[in-house]
Length: 90
Image 1 (cartoon, rainbow, N blue to C red):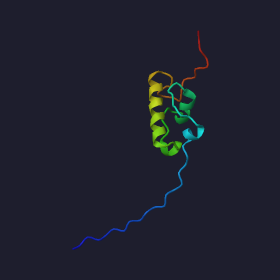
Image 2 (image 1 turned 180 degrees about the vertical axis):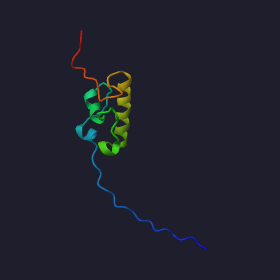
Image 3 (image 1 turned 135 degrees about the vertical axis):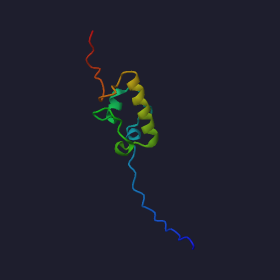
Image 4 (image 1 turned 90 degrees about the horizontal axis):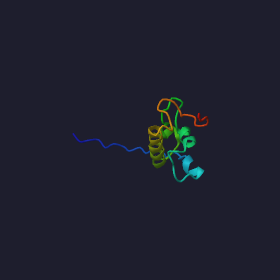
């Protein structure tokens, strides 16, 4: 018995969305920029996945790294979106 040859069906490539980080002209993603990072976090504190946020792979890795660093330095909370820094108590 010989093996049957499989037919390869190619999907059409869908048009890609441009990365919002590169459109905004942001070159460096800093972990201290909480306002930028909270755009990529859900209300429960989870990082928004790449397929939903529309970021390219390089930007998603940078955002993820910055969010984790901000959490460890207590700029962002682990459980909820972020801690407001507006009201500083003396």
